[in-house]
Image 1: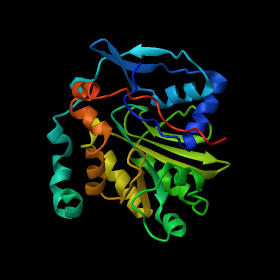
Image 2: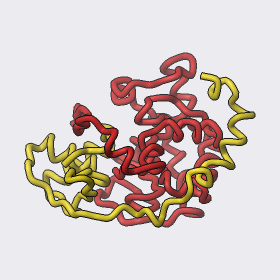
Image 3: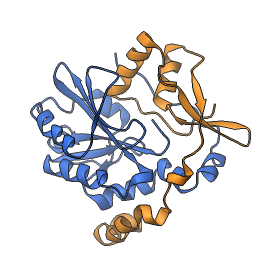
Image 4: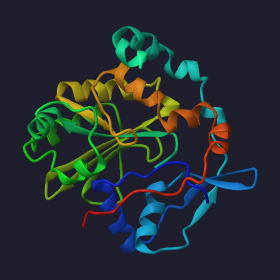
Length: 94
Length: 167
């Protein structure tokens, strides 16, 4: 399974490791299959925790991407971007 | 963590200045883990309860975590250790940036003089919408939401990364 993100290690991560050590992974990881590759889309911290605990098999569930839930990218950000260009010009020039 | 979530933690500006004398551009993972950020901010856990006004609580898998929002959506985790705040973990659902969550969390952070730390870029982000959106636009989560298939096919042997060095 191919991770698609980097799990950050922070305070809640140490609690997650302890929880998985005691109870195992209760909620299956989610992956999407594309062109024969399984891409992990939800559960990166659980996978990293399992790795640290030496767990080599994890429960995983194939899901479909919620494409219908996505908005047009412009609608996601346009209202903020237009303001950003005025309020943070130095950042936009980088 | 879901690929469409943009991960941050909130930290007190006062503590950043105490540690660095200035507001640095970045805080490395090592610097973040080596410091206690909330020791002098115990009373702020009460202020964070204001999250109740715009985000429903959800059951947490750990007694030491007070959790709001959806597991794979907009969410806040208040991590406590013996009643002291250890971490305020905020994840933004990049599919849902147009909702009320982002501006209300920004307002909360601003009112409490907190700064976001982006966990991907390690950059400190001022609590205002333009700066936060700027960081989100550069994130993996944004690239995924923009075009998931292109995002997948652009991955080159990504592996789970991270270092576990807390007891």
